[in-house]
Length: 250
Image (tube, rainbow, N blue to C red; front, side, top):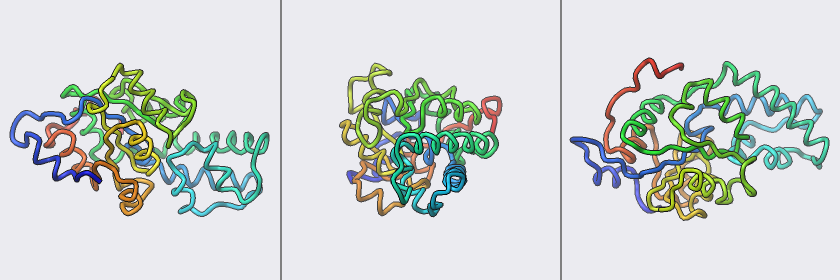
């Protein structure tokens, strides 16, 4: 690990106009911006039960959050799960998940203010997710954060999903960003950190999502943020303004 938010904070302008540390920030979605873990756990357990599969424990589901469900579900199943059987399970999971997330999704406290300020001070924002891009866009719109982001890259848009670097590289390409030193990847899972490092980018692990700090530290991120305030200090040096109410729907 190359540093902490406090080390970065000392290099930013804490007293005056905030100077963004990075020109582009690529955020993971679930567990980083959206508090969606409970939705994922419930939907997964219901879908497995519907298909007479052994219902996985919540901790095991959370451990595999961060990679596409096409990969995590076979790992969660205690028997061979391929072809039509896997497709049917995925279909039912998505139906249950959509029902739950229509009302159950929330944004982590302070995150909307951070996104507002990053956008205000010219930082370009993208989403790099293991969730299908259409679902990610629908979830983002439902909580009113879609307006902050220029691009959303999901596993359906790349050859290899996280933890391969493809998702981050595709986001950089879509944004026309060629300087890796200008880009930070922010995520709550080791898969995010591994992806960012494989793409040659700086990374920040956040501890309020799927993976705990000890596991994240083993992935050797550039920074670890333990709260949204920590992340704000890393990115902007100070908390500037609250997002106006007219931009909020949560």
